[in-house]
Image 1 (cartoon, one colour):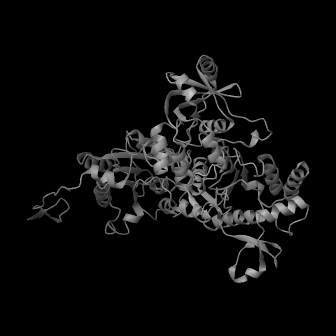
Image 2 (cartoon, rainbow, N blue to C red):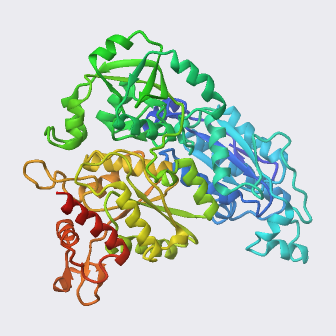
Image 3 (tube, rainbow, N blue to C red):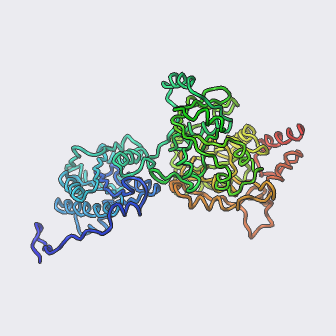
Length: 614
């Protein structure tokens, strides 16, 4: 049967709504972890003047949510008028119908477990309220977000020239000029896009969704440092002095620094058994979202310490006699060392340097919430380079970076490395980035005895920058405080995740990252290309784009480092680390163009000093 509608068109009356047999709980289990049993379906309705930034925020929010494995889709005003609503004009009736259709379509997306993002001027309150009612009747969340930018700001963003045409009388009924816009009386959120950065606008929406249980806490792009506020230090230090204490090693103290500065966000302290098992078996933390955490961050203690501390509600941690942290509600569990090293390293050879330290450590692990009482400093003249994740984010913001590409290294920089970093910057500029910034980020925690010491590496890196091999103006050099584990593809995920915490969105991965020769066979423990392959598949790292290492060698014809061309292999000379160290020890110079001369001098002096001392 049919009957006329209010618009005069005929509509069917013999239709019956057919409910789905798939529950929202089932959809949630299929489409992601976190939120309300994993179900994220809702509609975020961006409203505001043309040019206010609705589509810009919506598309960036969509991209951000998808990197967090949360399905999202943007319904943009212009895009919808290319298809679904291409038969509608801009009369009052057509505008109402435009919004009605979008409200219904958004509801279907939301019901399917997708975060539907709508970016429409939608100038009339009654139309927006109808869209809200449609969702409420279906039991779906609806968030009205007012993108509030002053008219003069919107006009400066008018890339289509619509405001100019409207003021000239060429467009009639243009919202904000000769048609009123009715701002929301009680929006769920107001975004001041004329005052707030795009990144911060996105995070404001994420915070709103997290408050309403739509997304897990892990979806927020925030660093979780564990160092206490300055005003709390005195009282907590006094409390710590009265607690039972345990002495920690330098390695443990480096992990305290990692946790205290927030590199291991969202960990709240040394891992409890539940987090430890998730890391060992899944390479991720899975409570409240999938978060990559490929290496355990644990505190070993002896059996004697466990017996002495077992009934304590809190434990003071001391390094070299100084109180550095309090561990709250400690949980002790067995340190099954062989199982740990086999899962973390893929071998259990006792002469692997980090594995050796694990075997020599305590038979128990203790986890708990950590309160770090002071900033960890080492008095080696390098503390100025130990920037925390939040300090790095602030630095990138000050520099106006629109892309940050990170290069992690534990070796000196030669011109082949520099070529890769230069090439990455060039490609980012070609992709449209205006100000890509390099994070040159040498590892500064424990390394094995035959690695170049940190102070020498920093001197060498500074020489590279001073000679202009890398652009000082667009480079931030800082020290990453983590110890080195030499755990190959497992560890490189940790290196990548921690740079993501610091604000990087591109990560350069090299050959055999975090690898080393086998203690007996001297062959590579890990297949050299597996690190970069694993990073492209690793869960929880979607927010970062992996830049694979291109093989560079010395081009004999160009007398410079160049990307290797197999078809011209006779033109290239590969200078291995062994050969480089041989040059340095003997005082022989490498080929011109292999390394910045002043940087080579730093390296040569170090190796020659070793030769003299031995």
